Image 1 (cartoon, rainbow, N blue to C red):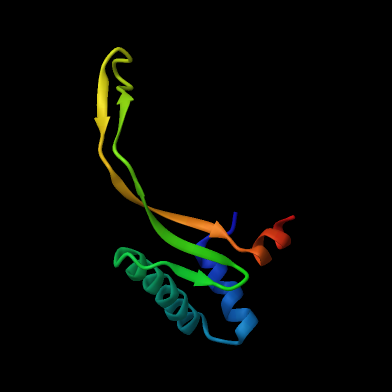
Image 2: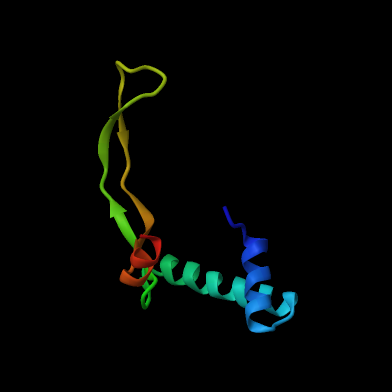
Length: 92
């Protein structure tokens, strides 16, 4: 698995930016994606994928503590990512 620090190192080395500038750029990109999703907007990056907010409907479930007890699971918004064609082809 590649972590955030490793991604920043790769960004810095591939662009010739200093690590501090690469860190600011990296954080800015993900901050913008996060703020857009929080505002209900989707973010589409060509050949990579699409980040979007989906609403998961309320439903009934079973309590993990007592399997005989039914519980109500409330509706919630969740972030989703759908891989784009370019990413899918690269992974295959």
